[in-house]
Amino acid sequence: MEPLPQGTFMDTVEFVTRANLGMKLLVAIVAGGAIGFERQLSGKPAGLRTNILICVGSALLMDISIRIGGVWGGAMVGDPARLAAQVVTGIGFLGAGTIMQGSGVITGLTTAATIWTVAAIGLAVGAGYVFDALLATLMVMLVLAGLGGIEHKLLRAQRVASVTIRTRPEVTLEWLQAQLAMEGLRVLESRVFDHARDRVFELRLRGPSRQFDIAKAELATHARVSNVFFD
Image 1 (cartoon, rainbow, N blue to C red):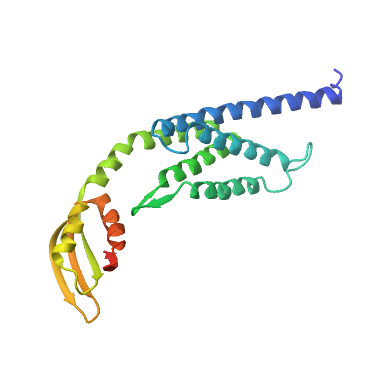
Image 2 (tube, rainbow, N blue to C red):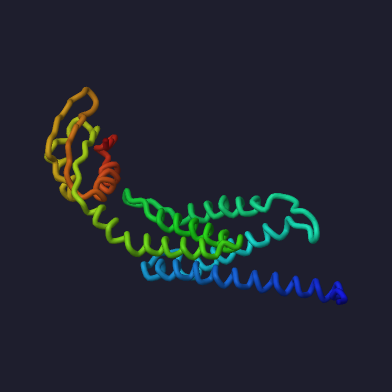
C-alpha cells in the first residue's frame, strides 16, 4: 500500500484539527451561554454575550497554547500552560472592572467571580476536558440560581454587632440612635465617654446584616462623626 501524498496527509491533519477546535468552540458557546443566560435573567452587567465571548476566547487560547508549542513529528517544546496562565491573570482585570462600591455596599463580586470561572471553563474546554467543563458549568449554574435566594435571606437575617463611634462633643445618644434607626438598626446597649475634643460611643446594635455596612457609610458622611468602627 502506497503512503498518502504529503499534501493529502497534511490536509487531513488540518481538517481533523479544525474539526476538533470547532467542537471545542461549540462546547464553549454552550457552557458560556448557559451561565450567561442565567446572569442575563438576573439583570447582571456580564450577561449572555459577555460570558460566551469569555468562554470561547479562553478555549481558543488554550487550544492554541497546546498546539503552538508542538513541533510536527517531534517533541513538545515550550510550556503550553504559559498562555493559559496569562488568561487567568488577564481575566482578573476584567473582573475588577465589574466591582463597584456605593452607599457602603460592594456590588459586582459575584459577577467578577463568575467571569473568572467561565474563563477557567473555557480553558478546560480548550485543553480537551469537555466532561469536566460541562460538569463545572452545571455546578456554577446550580450555585448561581440555587443559592441566590439563600444568600438574600442571610443578608436579611438579624445579627448583633458592637460598634465604636467617635463624634464631636455636642452629639447626643438620642441623635445617634435616630440615625441608626433610619438604617434599621436598634441600640441594645450603650456607653458614652467624653473627652476634651470629642465624644466616644460604644454601642451594641441589632438589625439586618446588610444594613451594618450601609449604616457605617451613612454615618461617615456626617460632619459631626469622625470615625466608625464595627467589631
